[in-house]
Image (cartoon, rainbow, N blue to C red; front, side, top):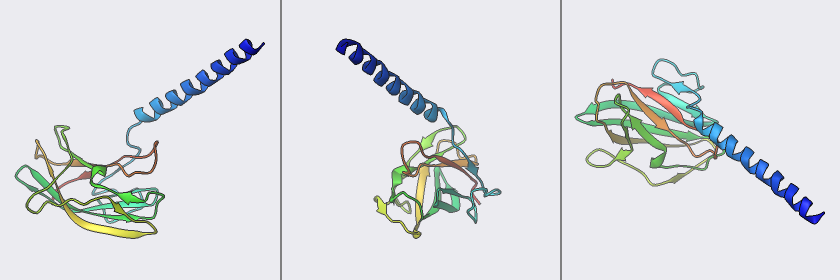
Length: 160
């Protein structure tokens, strides 16, 4: 009787674990759930380009190409459950699908993890990304820390 009960409990736990693995796999296969561009700002943020994820907003401005660097200013406002932003939250994807994190140097800044909430602003910060293909448009991928199953936003940006 005890052996049968233990077997049933092990099967139940196995099914729960398999269900959780399936849920995580399904969520990881999902692409970005919305896109924002310079012409469209469907996420209740303006002026574009920008993205709003559950009350955490990122604005992009002053996008320029300087050689193989794409420079821009980013500004954040946080009215979400997240508590911070960090440089690792941003990547730039060029036309060749090459992804780049922030680079530093002359005129290129970065920041350490910044803690803020309750509608506070952070920035603007001048940041740079190295690209292998300088033909616009570019995609700024923002991954704010809002939990395991949330979120990634792709923002289409064009220098100008």
